[in-house]
Image 1 (cartoon, helix red, strand yellow):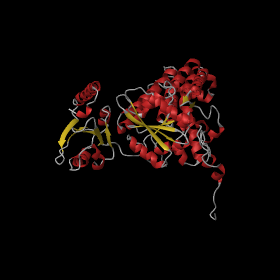
Image 2 (image 1 turned 180 degrees about the vertical axis):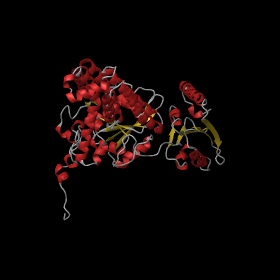
Image 3 (image 1 turned 120 degrees about the horizontal axis):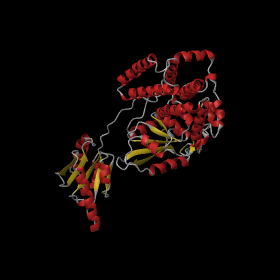
Image 4 (image 1 turned 135 degrees about the vertical axis):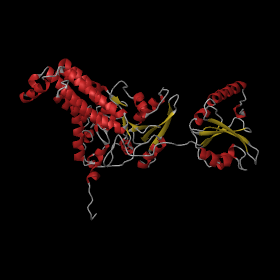
Length: 501
């Protein structure tokens, strides 16, 4: 029994006692919940320790905490912070904190001589992956550090790149059952307060029992959760997150997730790799245009094939028509079924390769693609021309730097195929209009998702489809409405000092 849970009011006493007893009964069902009772041999003070063995570092408890509590100078809670060599020691009278603290790696200390008072000593065992190279956003040049699952480590990587007092970190606990820590990060005095308040309000309004990854947050706070387009950019690179914070954006980092969410964002940013900033502006601009062309090719080439062979033979050149007739003369399936068969085959190979172990997955992807493709052509199920087009479309879709946007591109091909079968090229145009209508009304934290294309902002085109030299990018993006729109004076950016100066 713990006397510090007593209260002057009998009603409160009964309520608190039942609250702790209920917690104790539930906790004792688990084998890793332990209690230990001690008496100081010098002062005679009796105390008890309660902890979760799988969450604490036993070395801290045995070598730092216990020797201090058994020393001759320990008399009361007031001596804890001077005796115990642990930075985080919290003394409280609120028993509502017991469950949260114990299951976050704290050790509960109680004393028989104390009334309604107890202490939490931080003894958490930090276990996790060490900082390694980026896997999703890998780059040949530039830094080779990536976020890990520890929120503290991720904030360390971020503060190392922005060692300024303006970098503000606000912490929240979300999830009724998981109580997941997450951090809202921004630069004070630079970011638009409306963006910060929007994210803060949505995080406070979360009503979900489990938050296991930043992907949960992205789906829960997105402007349109029914859209296949991601409205917050996720990144595993601390250098990229630091860069967008300097632009005036907001980042959300979740404990247990190696990816940070960035917002507000635009459609164009999903096709820009952060490696572009490490390359010459002309090379970077060329690569961005290649990615945009690859995305358009990946979405439209198969629907155009189906539309041309179903409705628009007159659009096909005579020399190419002979090749198509030869390749399809023994194919029993119509173009739409032929295309769907190959598209679904590619998707099956992608999923099989992604879910299997790395070495086996690579083998399945290469061997499976060759064997199935060759066998389908020789069996007369598909034409060799369409096989080449589908393979090129699949290859083009891999040029998208952001994985989530790559999944969206894979999905978009199927409605375009359906409309191409129904109305030919007119159906493709109609589907494109529906897509543009959806993108025009889509927003990211209340900001236009198609900016700078719509509404058109000429200044923001300097870092959109093409990248201008750094000395031409003296202003931050207009749609962010930052408090400091200018990065530097354009005249100073152009100035180059001579050796004599």
